[in-house]
Picture 1 (cartoon, rainbow, N blue to C red):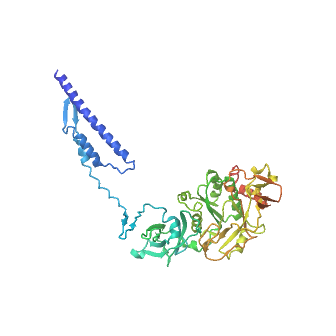
Picture 2 (cartoon, one colour):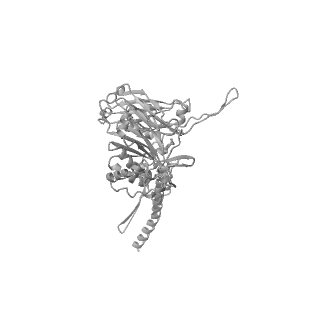
Picture 3 (cartoon, rainbow, N blue to C red):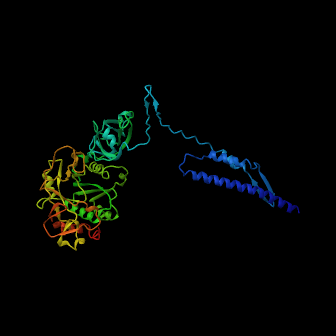
Length: 519
């Protein structure tokens, strides 16, 4: 009987404390769960160890703070409710976060003369002071920084720039040299929210000639732009030359390539077949001493990449992903910034640098070569190229029913022959003589420019065909001259006649890898 009473007493005590223990454990679990969940919710409310300790103390106030031990049949039951609260009490309180800096708020007031002085309190920002894309050496003491900046700031104010070189060798002030940055705005006012800014930093002496390394710092100051009572200066580290990485011979040695292509921003759902034709044509045209830089602003989708991939593998093409520039509202997918970055990044890589689009085909007469033409223009830092605009709908009747097998340069054979109008021109430069560039020509160069290139070099422009993923031919004609949409056209088979040569060249260079390319 005694054993039976002890057993009942044990079960009674165990049942009472087990319920309290279950309540405590459940409460702690819920508190920990809430605390963990709150960390992932953006809120002005926070929860800390001290908060949990306070809640636990409130719970444990109603629970016994003693230890009860009952021994029955060699079974020991121990309840220690003070252990949890004692452990939490040992956690040090974290230091309180610093209070946020309260913005200075100006309130309106009434002046002595009775005029109400209104107050304006600015918050946030409309456009960034400066957004960098790249910074490159132009010699032993000069650099170019390429970026975009707020267009209203440059249109209505006079922001300034200062450049600082911090050498990795030397002590204190002996490590630093500064100069005033000279800015150029090469997009001719085409900018939108942002305009392109090229900052030239030319120091009074060579920097890093010992090849120990250093940093180029740009100080971009608004100089009161937009708010004449405030001058904001951003310190931007734009270039870091590591120890032993500078090769000064590149600035005096012969360029690696004779011909270098800097492409504009490619965007949209581009036609892979037209890209295929364009790259094969120009690798053949410029030859083995050429290189092409393609800038992907969203237009190099999987099918376009497949036609570029063989030429990338052969070393003719470099593809750059510039899709992030879409965050900033500049003209035509920041085209001016992109070509300027290409100019300065590869300035010493090519003897001649070309700027034109992927729906344009450079051409020289049969008795000439690109080398003989450029040799005849070597006294010029820049020359422009005459445009031959081709209709993107008119085709010859002899191709009816067979156009799906023909390249665009084969079947689009009618040229706009309207006279007395000014047409866009593209251009080529000797890049070592340029400080900044545009899309149709440069205004920042050292040397002469010529536009007198008719009969020596021209380009055929198939406007709109690169963005069309459907059959181009809409109208078939059996004449050498016609008028379409009030524009006179004449039959021109110049590129049609050499299309077969380009196809054979492509097959020789990369095999049949892209033979099944579709529109």
